Image (tube, rainbow, N blue to C red):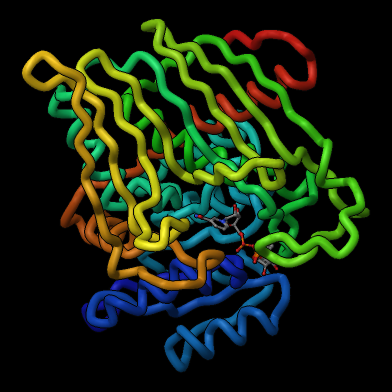
Amino acid sequence: MKNGKLQVGIIGCGNIANTKHLPNLAKFPERVEAVAFCDLIAEKAEKTKAKFGTPDALVCTDYHDLIRLDLDAVYVCTPNRSHAELTVAALETGHNVMCEKPMAINSAEAKRMLEARDKSGKLLTIGYQNRYRKDTMTLKKLAQSGSLGEIYWAKAHALRRRGIPTWGVFTNKFEQGGGPLIDIGTHSLDITLWIMDNYKPVSVLGSTFDKLGRTLHGDEQGTEGHWDEKTYEVEDAAVGLVKFENGATVFLESSWILNTTCQKQAMATFYGTKAGVEMDYASPDGGEGTNRKLVINHISAGCPAVEQIYLEEPENASSDLIFNYPGATAECKTWLDAISGKGQLVVYPEQACVVTQILEAIYQSAATGKLVEL
Ligand SMILES: NC(=O)c1ccc[n+]([C@@H]2O[C@H](COP(=O)([O-])OP(=O)(O)OC[C@H]3O[C@@H](n4cnc5c(N)ncnc54)[C@H](O)[C@@H]3O)[C@@H](O)[C@H]2O)c1
C-alpha cells in the first residue's frame, strides 16, 4: 500500500493484461495503482505503462526486477508455459498472485504453485472471469439452493466455428501445452465443476483432432483473422468424458475450428434430479452478444415446464467480441477486496488445479487411446 492505494505489478504486457486486467483496475482509481510492468519485449512494457501506469512506474524485461519490489499483488499474464515459474517466484518473494488461466501447463506444475501458496501464506487466484458473469452467479445460487436437485450429468461447451487465435503463441504446443482444450475448454470445465461443486474426478477418456487447423484454407478468415497453417502445432478440437466419484459424468467439447453452427463458449448444460438448466446467449439479434439467458426445465404442478431468466452484462457491453470479457469487473473487485482483507476469493487454486488435472488426462487419454484413472 502507498498513499492508501494497493500497488500492483504486471508480468506479460500483451492482450489479456491490456484488455482485461488493466482496463478493469482503472475502474478503481481510488483503490489501486499499477506501478510495475514487465515484458520480454521492452516496447510492450513501455507502451502499457504509458497507458495504464503511474508516471514513475518500473518498466523491465526481467521479472526478477519486478518481484523485488514491495507490491500488494503480481499479475501473471504470460503464455501458459511460464505460469508456474513466475507464480512460484512471486509467492516466494511474498506477493499475492493473480495468475491467468489455465493455472498451469500440467498438474505437477499446478501442485507446485499450491505448495508455494501454502508456504507463503499469500493469496493465489486464477483468471476464470466467466464465474463472475451474472448468469453463472445466478446458476451457482440456484444449484446451491438445491432447486436443481442432484446434478448427475453435465455438458461443458467451448465451441468456436472459426476462432483460431492469431496473436501471441496460441498455436505453439511447447508454449501453451495444447490448443482449444487448454485454452477455452478450461473456462467451460471450470464453470461446470464449480456449479456442480464436484472436484472428485476418478476417470477420463479423451480424443483430440487435428483435421482442419493444419489444412490450407486459402483466403478463409477466422473471426480473429487468417491463421498460419504452417506453424499450427496444436489440436483443433478435443472432447473428454469425465466420471466422478459419486457417478456424476461430464462431457466436455472444445474447438477453435469445427464445421458447426453451434458456437457456445464458456457455457454448460446441467441435468439435475429436480431441474435441468441450459446456459445460452440472449442477444436481441439472436447472435452471441454479452447478454445471456438460463433456460430452466423443471416440473410445475405435475407437468414439465420451462422458465427463462434473462441476464444483462451492461458493464462490459461491447461489440468487440474478441476482447470482451463479461464478468471481468466483478473478478477485479473480488480480487481487490480479497487482498485488502475485505472479502473472500471466488476462484480457489485448489479448484483450478483439478481443472488442469482433467485437461491433462484428456490429452493423455487421447495420446494413448486408453482410459486414464486419477
Ligand atoms: N481469461 C481469459 O479469458 C484469457 C483470454 C486470453 C488469454 N488468456 C491467458 O493469458 C495469458 C496470455 O495471453 P495473451 O493473449 O495476453 O498473450 P499475448 O501474447 O498477447 O501476451 C503475452 C505477453 O507475455 C510476454 N512474455 C512472455 N514470456 C514472458 C516472461 N517470461 N516475462 C515477461 N513477459 C513475458 C510476451 O512478450 C507477451 O507480450 C495466457 O495464459 C492465456 O491463456 C486468458
